[in-house]
Image (cartoon, rainbow, N blue to C red; front, side, top):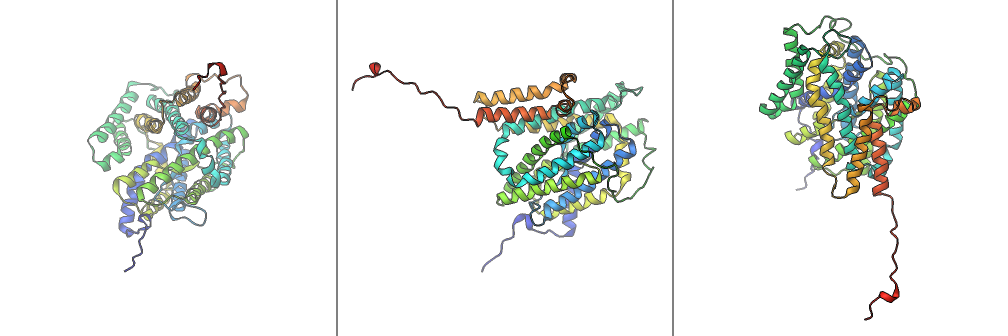
Length: 448
């Protein structure tokens, strides 16, 4: 008897199971999806209410992007169990754009323009992905993590150097307490608890801060509790060429990460990953990223931690992840949630941020572990790329005499690392070098 085999990702487990497992996906990535808007909003000087709006907008768009990626439509969506959300790759670059004169509207313009460019090149990306092997992507992801660590240190000290308790022992102690809670969950918790260790440590750290009088939730109830995210709540996008170039580099990194996630989840669910499927997934990434600025949020990408969750749980249905996307949309309709998150004490976020941002760097190092370092060429590529990327972190004035567009592009170090790594990879691994042919003098050729 002939049986029609349904692909694992196309199985429907029922409404109750889909919601339960979908909620688990949301809990796994919740800390990751709210962190970028919280980091960027704080760094560029948005107020409490604006950060709340930014967070809820990110949740809402992340939900829409997840539905597009999982359910799909013609030309869009890999139809794999992939959760979408704000990409960490662009955080440092967006802070650079926002703090070097561009402002928040220039960030939105750069995200919109680079996403549209990404939408055009998505079908052809598989042809240029060979220029982004692990030696390049690993270097870029590593420097992303390193470039975010100063943000965590700033949070640990209090988040604002104008406050009276900046760098106080109470701030450092609160951050250390949060970090210790996270480490305890990671060491002794079950698999489920370890997956949400960052979120739980922030919750417990916040409760402790409240009990000791370090929390101010008085403004959480200000404003609407329920609201549909409005269009252009932060103003119309402003298109700044240097900012767009910087975000185009982030876009390339995002496409590379999403391609890797599609390949990984395809292997996990046991389905063939065709070039068309990758193109559809990348188009979904870029379309949702292009829509994001209209709601006041940032570039979207697949979340690697949720790919790991699919592998651990063995739940491979894309409809489960679609249920998670619906939950994200519902969370995005409650601005009060965003204001609550924005009121979490900075040292609590800093304690968790040490692990959160360090994990990004560790992911890059894990990618670099795939590189063949017995060949000195790859060692040189990584050494020079990472060293170049560290320049803005070590000396903020290094590019002070360069044109403004150079300062904006190279303020974070991610752009430098990406450009240097790509150029050196092409130079060492793609350019064909003809070796000179040494002719042997006839007089020294031995006679047979």
